Image (cartoon, rainbow, N blue to C red; front, side, top):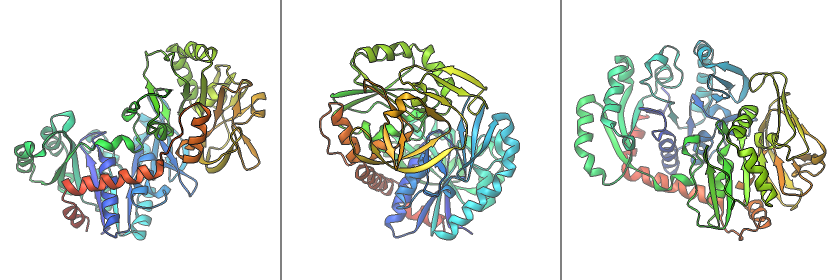
Length: 482
C-alpha cells in the first residue's frame, strides 16, 4: 500500500490546497521526504515545471512546501477552461487538445492510467504523498468515471479525510450530507473529517464537532481557524484574488478578465507596502489616479478582449494613456495591445480575427507549438536580469518589437511603444525576482523596496505549518497515511 493521505472537500474552495501545503511542510519538518499530488485540477493559473510541462499553481506551491522542484507528475491532469463549455486538456504537463465539458466524461477512462503512472512514480521516490481532491465526492453524477476524488482514492488504496468549510455555513450538513449521498463503499474510504476556516473560539463548536462524529461515525482530526496570512501565498482560484492591504503610493490597477490566467504575477506587487494594487471588477471604470494598468494573461484572448470592450475599458485605457499613464500587457494582455489577433485554426475559440486596442504597433497570429519554458532574461531598458517563464500559444510581430521589453539570450522579447509608456511581454513571473521588481518599481516612481518575496513565502509556509500543527492531530493523520 502506498504511504499517502488524501484530503477531499465537501465542495470547491473549502481550503484543501492550503491544508495540503501546511501538512506537506509539517511532514518535511519531521524529516520525511514528502510530495504533493493532485490527480485532476481545473485552473487557468499554471506553473511551468523544470521538466518542461505545466501543472496547477497550487501544486507548485505545495512542492515548495515540500522543499521540492515542481514536476508534472504532481498534477498529471490539468483542465484549463477556455469557455463556459470547453477546456484545454493537459496530460502529464503537455497539451493534448481541447474538449467540450459534455465530452470530457468519456475521455476520463483514458486518463486514469497516466494518473496512476504518475502516482506510482512519486510513491517510489518519497516517504509520503499528500493528495488533494477536486471539487467534492458528493458530485455523484460524476462518480462513474471519476479520477479526481473517490475514483482515484479507491483505485490507489489511499485513505481519505473530508474537509468542510464552516465559514460558508452548514458544515454539519456538508459532512453528513456527503456521507448520505455517496455509496457505502466510498464512505468506507473516508476515515475522518476536518473543520476548516473557523472564525472565533474553536471551542464554541465542540457540540457541533461531537455531533458530526456521532452522525457519521468518522473521527474528527481538528478544527482549523481562519489563517490570516493566506493572502501572502499564491492563489490558484480567480475567486480568491483580492485587493492588497496597501496604504498608498503608486496605484496599480489590474483588469479582472473572465478567463484571467497566471494572475499570480501580481502576488509580489500586492505584498509591497508602498503600493496600492486594485483588481478592477467588471462594471467599475479605470480610476483616474492609476499610475499603471496591467492587462493580465488570459486563456481566451479574443473573447476576453470582447469582454473588455463591452465593459468600456478600451475607452478608459485610451483616456489613461492620454493622461500620461502607463500600461503593461502580459501574455494575452500583450496580444490585446496590438492591432489585431488572428486565430485561423480556432485554437482558443471560433476561428477568426479581432481588432486589437492599437496601443502597440504589433499583430498576433495564434498557432504553432505551445511555449512552456523557464527563462533567464534581461530587461532591455533597465539592463537588469530576471527569471521568469513562458506559457503561451501565438507569435506577435511588428515595428514596436524593435524596442523589446527584454532579451532572452540573443532573442528580443516583447515590445515597447515609441513613447515608452505602453509595454508588452510574454514573460510571466518577473515580479517574483526581487532585484528586477525593485528596479522596475523605482523606474515607475515608487519608493525603493526591501521586500524579499521568496523569503516571505517561505516564512508564510512555516507559519501555515505551525497553524496546522496547533489545531490538527498531525501525528494521527500521519499514522493514518501509514
